[in-house]
Length: 105
Image 1 (cartoon, one colour):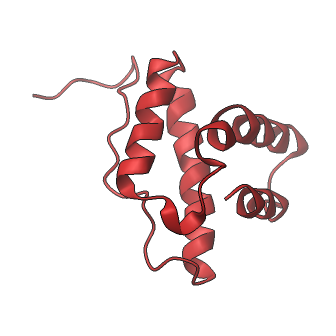
Image 2 (cartoon, rainbow, N blue to C red):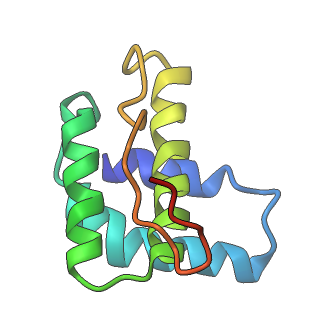
């Protein structure tokens, strides 16, 4: 998965240099340590949900987790687009509420 993440990053030509630095940091500090050792086809919805739970337990802010998840979903969409997997595992993932989101019963 690490090689695919690197390729996805190089394709983000529409991003500003400062945004690319942020994405690179998030990949190296969060996504790759948690999921980089997996083969793309091994990453399931449960694997992604467990990664999100780990990030939350590690104390990452909800907004950081949301942004990290967006990057991960982009990587997995690249895998779908290249026919490496049939569907993205980034579906119906429960993300932590940010402090600005209202709670709905």
